[in-house]
Length: 403
Image (tube, rainbow, N blue to C red; front, side):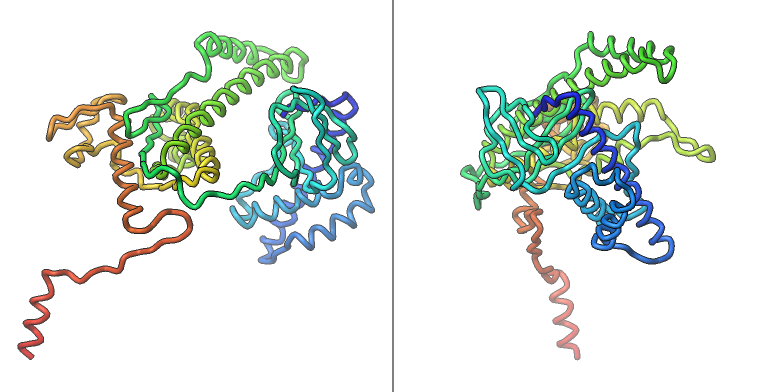
């Protein structure tokens, strides 16, 4: 939801974001230094040292203390989840300022009219914001972030909704994420949308050429960058709206949804390689990476997981190997049957179908096989015990009789 800060409040929010960034970077450097000495420092130790640092450096006291503590908590979780040396720094140029206020008891929200509301934040006072919908629950925390030239707020709300034990429908569906079509379902439906028109794409290219000619640090360059960021922000909003629209329909209709388990992070890695071992087909790989990121594969999976919590839909992730090369009718695997990005024609049985729909049917079949074995991919796994081979039983008996 968009915040309407006064100029003084916007400057204050910018300072808080900078202080939280400094605390993150300092805490990360401290953790890395400890790891180099085969030692470890946890959140409690860093929180105590933060109190001492605030006594020595007055500028740390400008930010609310719970915002700084929450920054250290997030850093602690990131280091445990990814490893200390894999956690990224927060750059002053590329990182968008943001901070979280975890104490929901100090946050008050009031609706002013149909479109606007106001929120009372610690050290900020009352701030108007665009209240697009009712919160529908108790506020637990609030995150303030800047995107371009505007500030936004997101609330963590306890709505009291309990996840259903099972979906009202027993139907199942397979979903394939593609490049030509964003989402293809096993029932034959194709969901796709262009997030940037041809006119916008050409305009963005003109801005890129204009940016290359402008002097770094100039006012004209900053103005061009603001226009480019605004275009990308509209594109991101359209992508998020599309994913929410598709996910809402899939989870409302089906009790089981099977999707591919795709390592999008690795799939979109650069193919440049190193100076010693340069990569191959770098331009083609870069184009594929842009297409994958444009379709929002990872965002779709996140939205699907979040929406399934409210409908009781079971999300099953299956391996992606050979799903696009296998015929959904005769189960023959042949890479040559995939004639193009959109056409699949089996050379064994002659079955012809949209390639993405064919892949979605294979994903559904694999997902139903997984659920039949009891592995629902929800943190528990009920594996069947391996049965003895029927071929080997008579031979074992004959050996026993011979003895």
